[in-house]
Amino acid sequence: MWIAFALISAVCMAGSSFSLKRAVEHGGSVVSTFTARTVSGVLLLGLVAATGAWHPLTPAYWTAVGLVLVPEILGTIFLTLALRSGDLSLVQPILGLLPGLVMLGGVVLLGEVPSPPAGAGVLLVTLGVYCVGLQGGGSLLEPLRALGSTRASWFAVGSATAWSLATLVHKRGIAAVGPFPWAATLAFVSAIGLGLALPLLARRTSGEAGWPEPEQRGPWMRFVCLGGLAWAVQQMGLHTALRMAQAGYVVAISSTGILVATALGILVLGERAAARTRAAGALLVCAGAVLIALFG
Image 1: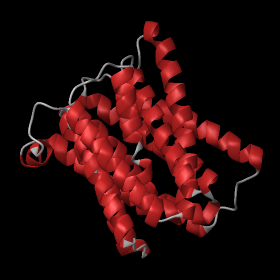
Image 2: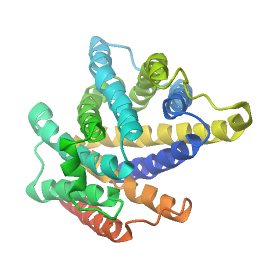
Image 3: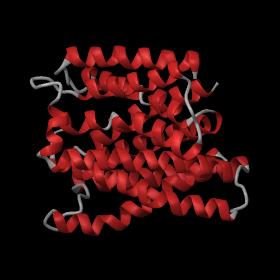
């Protein structure tokens, strides 16, 4: 059952990324993400209130909030800085480190030791996500070589590392209050953090915070709301799956969403570059997901 929730998370992650990509055509990336997370938080809080799923706020809950605050916000800010200062072809492959980092962190911090076949599946997914992120026209090792010369690649490493730590903390938050309340908490935590970061980032971009122009606000708001809805459903699926299975397995399966995002990019946005490496990466991701499903 956890695989179904992880796959729901994967599909909605792709939908959220696609919607935000369209939103930033009309407004700034941080502003768009901040608004989408706020929309997600309102939707999730409404769901929690309607279902009566809220739990008492115990010390364990507040400890989890304190632990997740910094890595969740840093992961988002690092990704924004990476995309601002470098090409997507260098940034996206590095984010493929996330499943492997979560698996290693789960072993060290949570005592979640994967079975050898499932562990191999997580590594295949990691390699596959790396290959899907390659844009073509360059070396397979170009994103790794860029670690020695570009800040963008190191920002991407920072984002992957921060989000892997946040994922491990999610297990504590879910245990304290349940998956839906924790998802609502995470939405508001990240929205507040991004809101506080907006003035600082605006200074780095000549005072422009990135709010859309009046004539762009209609389509921007539609894409932002769609992205917020998709992110809310993604979080519900992700945290429900994390409650039922090892973090490394869940993140690896949910990372298959990059295949859906790639397909959307090809079919809707016309992004047909690097079809060969993307096809190879898709095969690796699928093979890894099968191993995790069979032996996880």
